[in-house]
Length: 246
Image 1 (cartoon, rainbow, N blue to C red):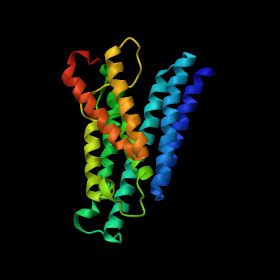
Image 2: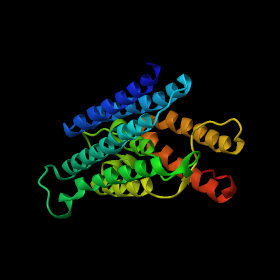
Image 3: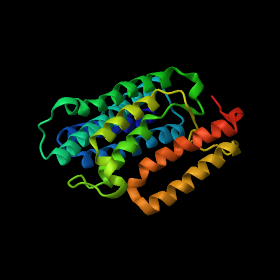
Image 4: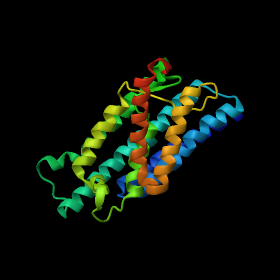
């Protein structure tokens, strides 16, 4: 019986992803973002519970990837699509699109393909047991859920946040994040290991900086935290390349 508990939690992650897709298509990206956040919690819990109970199975690994594909692959792309449509409405005052603007909402779909490739490669790649290669799908999802939760979507943002409601910037980030998903850039894992002091140092730097950013910017800090994670990983790759583990 206990071996089914982690899979049940994974199913909850999947259902959160389905609800996120539905609410995003209904034009409510903020609620969709909350469903993704709930799915992320279940995604953390299923692995923790499996380790606590001492159970694991090949079907559990595959089920986890399928759930992640919906919650962290399809749902963020649909949020990005809705954000682009909303930003075009704020920019033009209507949704009569012409020329290049007609294809902008579909730029987000590149993340669906890249997320699928990322998860398939992760399942087969034995070199990602410790450090990641490419941006994990949950990190990409956190980037996109932070925008509807951190920016007022019914008015044109002011200051730096105005970039997050620019349709061209959103389309660019869709392509850029898709490229990061399938890249081979080594990124340090956030799994804690008391014996790996070096990785712990980078993790602590990220956690402290993320806490400071979150204290000042709240949810809007998440894009900066993702950028900081990438930057710290790149610095680590340059400073201590011999410590990158597969």
